[in-house]
Image 1 (spheres, helix red, strand yellow):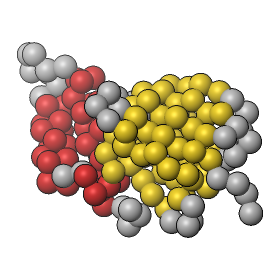
Image 2 (cartoon, rainbow, N blue to C red; image 1 turned 90 degrees about the vertical axis):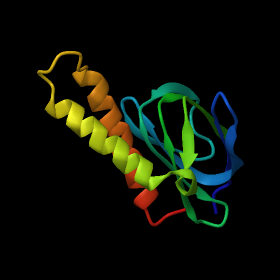
Image 3 (cartoon, one colour; image 1 turned 180 degrees about the vertical axis):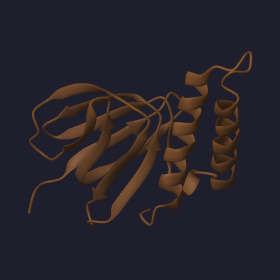
Length: 138
């Protein structure tokens, strides 16, 4: 059986996760990556998306993260996220309302004062939050 690694997920406001994990998967800016004990050290930026990991009992856990950086070391992973929410913390109705607002803004692309890229980013964040919130993992 493989040894566990230390996972820490930190935002400017708080520690979201600080526990041992069997494996950590995160949305790197160049694609999803996984880290097991003994991984080669690296530093990467993160994009908006789903961070998931297996806890020491093998149960799949997941969070929504909104960008930031990850540092992988042979014995652990530190995620410095702009924001992070456990599935249980996501307000699904609020995320769906944010998705609807973003879609309406994007439909008005040609209207004045509509920033399409900002609306697209808001839509993507809302979609990712909804995916995590509706997931069957904890």
